[in-house]
Length: 171
Image (cartoon, rainbow, N blue to C red; front, side, top):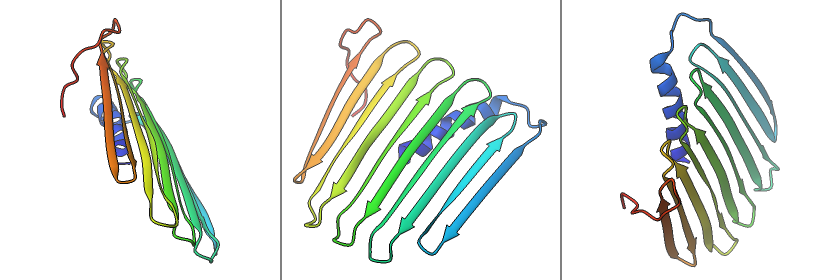
């Protein structure tokens, strides 16, 4: 998900601008591979943030493959973000992917994105993506996008901190 990277980068950038660069840094990486798959895990820690990420993949040599990745980061001043993603492809042509991401801002705002898309062996595609966000002031956005049989539908709503409906900005 592209928004996942953007959300994670925002947390890290905010912490990077405010933290000292003189503190110690630590990094570890573990890699395992074999003929049909593998995994990688990376941990980083310094004065600006702590982060972890993992990924793994496997294939059976018959046209079936799958993989997953996840990660998290915590900024020096309280921001936190995490994500999970997985995908698969089968020999019959079916495939899919799903994922989610969540961010807690250091000043109280949060955002969550989740969704998935699948393609069956006949090429039919369907999917859904949901987004919620709450600002530090309590305003809330909730939106959902679905696609099925070539039809795309998007719904959204916005409320203030008291739960009263307000206009959503943007498209």
